[in-house]
Length: 182
Ligand SMILES: CC(C)(COP(=O)(O)OP(=O)(O)OC[C@H]1O[C@@H](n2cnc3c(N)ncnc32)[C@H](O)[C@@H]1OP(=O)(O)O)[C@@H](O)C(=O)NCCC(=O)NCCS
Image 1 (cartoon, rainbow, N blue to C red):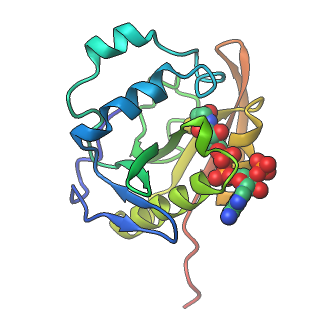
Image 2: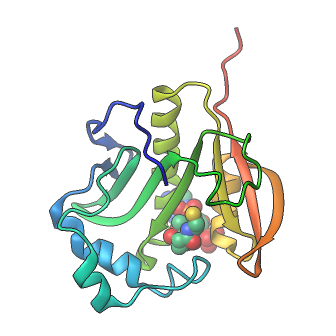
């Protein structure tokens, strides 16, 4: 995906009630490899990558790019949230005019079911709405990915369309920050 070159980056760590959103550091490498190698994390994302390949290919400090947050709980990485420029071609021009940015999230399975993803995504969306006011955010997920579908709804994404790709039904939703009444 293309970088969000127009935002000031890196940002100071963002603190929520339980989490910290921050830029990636070298100490996160092992957790990145866990994320990419997890078959549970990649059930709806085309399958995991082999661990030995990841050990060779993952850079010393993975995922350092604008809009890409490591999510930390009690000092340890539990996942990532990214708001990135949307690559319309990668999505097969499903709806090239739909928005400028895309939200994606990956959490280690032991961190599921505690509301951490919702807390982190809400903070990332709020950061993005302040950084680039008025720019809509889109989200893609398989409809079979029930956890992800529930999260999208909780965050306020509304359905734009469903379509078939990679032999599965895909869901595209859109989010716009609520503009306070004048
Ligand atoms: C998609 C994904 C991030 C969702 O994680 P999640 O933990 O289910 O999401 P949330 O943070 O919204 O947590 C919701 C759950 O936490 C529970 N919860 C527990 N304590 C909570 C609290 N204090 N606050 C809020 N929710 C809480 C909720 O009841 C809910 O449980 P339920 O799933 O049984 O209904 C996670 O499954 C994942 O990383 N999947 C793999 C990657 C992926 O598929 N990404 C999608 C493509 S972008």
